[in-house]
Amino acid sequence: MAKRAVKNGAKTAGKAAAKAAKTGAKATAKAAAKAAQAAAKAVASAVAKIVGLIAETMPYSLIIIAVIALIIIFALMFTSLISGAGGSVAGGGAWLVDDDKNQTPEEIYEGYKEFIEQAKDVMETQAKDALEGNVSDFCNGDTSAPRKIIQYVDKSHNVTFYPARGADGTINGYIEQFGTEDYADYMSLLFVLMTREKQQADGVTDEEIYDFDFKKSDFEEFMKTVNDNSCRWGDTFVYKTAVETSPHACPGQNCKTEYISGCHCSSYTDSEGKIHHYCGGHPYCPVNHTKLTVNLYTVKDYYHKEYSEIYNFTENEKARYEASKAIIGGLLEYWEG
Image 1 (cartoon, rainbow, N blue to C red):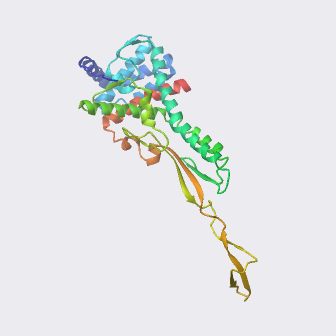
Image 2 (image 1 turned 180 degrees about the vertical axis):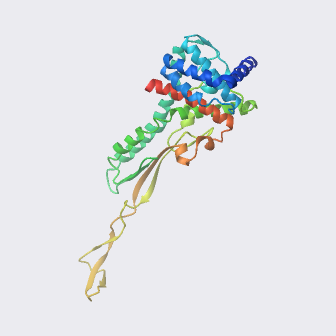
């Protein structure tokens, strides 16, 4: 469920905050960052990144995001209750503060952590586990001739194994390492795309901000699973395939005919005039092998383009994405650091 977060009252307060931000943002942000360091490592990390985003030329939506982020920091510092801090909170984190509840800082952290854990769980089950399962099934089934071939490709690896049996231990280790630095991108992109979707449904401009109650199904839709790389917003966040093809020749070997001696089906004369008899022969390397090719990339690495280009971000959407990523990244560093 999405709620329109910028109401008349919030807009009025937001514009006043924006004006204050334009005249004294740097000093306020610096003071807030310094105070936040004493309050929480997560807050300090987020503010340090957001401070760099506040400037005279920033879009209105980003200034509001940054100002409200500072308001949240002060509230956290004094362990105040937060009651509907307005739609601009949604511009920075979407699900950071529930507009319908009074929340303590601890409740805000726990609620935010729950969404991060959901995002990670979907990454594990629909990207990593799904690929690892395909790899293991294929490799364990390589028990008889013709032996199977498997190739794994990501931005750091491009390896081919023949025969395939036993290669799952190596390949699944590569898969397990994937994506650990990408969760802030993953969640921030989803927030921007869902905001755009709601804006288009309501027929409003991209300055309108919404506060989403995200569900696990939203993360599942954005991730999909093996061999399904499109979702309702366009490309899925992870590009992944496990495609089985045949026939293939043995890797690194040229197929040739191996002749059988002692037969007189055919003959040839060598350079010394000696006659050799042989029977036709058989292929040394028959082209009858089955190959599984596995690919695993973020969509950015697959296309070699920035997310903003892949998803056609407007300037407001770029700002919204960067602010959201700063907050999420700071919280991730806090929980995992």
